[in-house]
Length: 174
Ligand SMILES: CC(C)(COP(=O)(O)OP(=O)(O)OC[C@H]1O[C@@H](n2cnc3c(N)ncnc32)[C@H](O)[C@@H]1OP(=O)(O)O)[C@@H](O)C(=O)NCCC(=O)NCCS
Image (cartoon, rainbow, N blue to C red; front, side, top):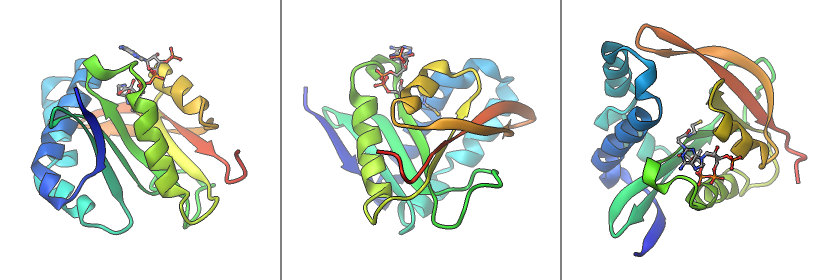
């Protein structure tokens, strides 16, 4: 089965919105009351919002497609995490999600590599990522890329507040 990783465009806004809601729900949906989950999905993954992100020069989104069907997505852009050490010009891995059936197959690393290359195309810079405090698998995954925990904050999902770890990869990382 051909599995293609490609840069997404504004024409992918609908597909991205659906996939993002599906992967978030698969991964984290069990953690929240339904109304909190729905409020988060409709705000964060609104089609128009995806269109704005996809059309913005400071952001990049990639879709992983198997036989033409989206099974994963990654997004990168300027750092928006609330940490005193983040500076203008720092980059962030904003999203990295595979449908469950595609996890543990090497495609996460493939998406991460393309996002990191894009973030570092103009030279070394500090990179950041936010990850749920109990998502130990993703924390190990990011650790393999040189990210280390430097802080935490409360991430709103509807009325729920999740403890989110802030990880940083110094510009000098190999
Ligand atoms: C994070 C993710 C993109 C990594 O991609 P991947 O191709 O699965 O990467 P890896 O195979 O290196 O696995 C990374 C970790 O995910 C976990 N994982 C991998 N396959 C899994 C599976 N089928 N089921 C549950 N967890 C799995 C493991 O804990 C693994 O860590 P380990 O190898 O140190 O034990 C992918 O696992 C994913 O989409 N997870 C769900 C969404 C998510 O948590 N995204 C991060 C949000 S910050």
